[in-house]
Length: 165
Image (cartoon, rainbow, N blue to C red; front, side):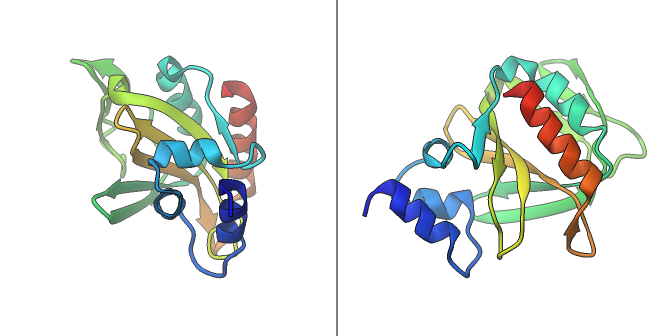
């Protein structure tokens, strides 16, 4: 079975399928797994140096879920993103009222991709950020209310995909 067939089989499985699982099944990095996805499922941004513009764009979305993946652990934080600013080598998100805050090192990122693939048989869309180590560092998922995608956020995702890819 070739990689395309493996990916199709995984994406049609009745179990949760993540980019990490696809990478494991293909025996490759998270970034290589994303690159192996069909083009209708994955589009890479043209220039990671536009990170600030991309984050600002996503901060306009009503609600997202930030996934932070580390050593097999997954943290999910639902909120609206806040815009940040650069200082001391970081993109700093310091809004006092923000649920999601912190410091991102854009220079440590290799690329980002707009990914659309089912998760637990539900439509899902997210922006995946990959480090220079080819690992998936974090994702910004289109937000949900009552298990349904928020339509305005989905529209924002699709518009941003066109703008940045």
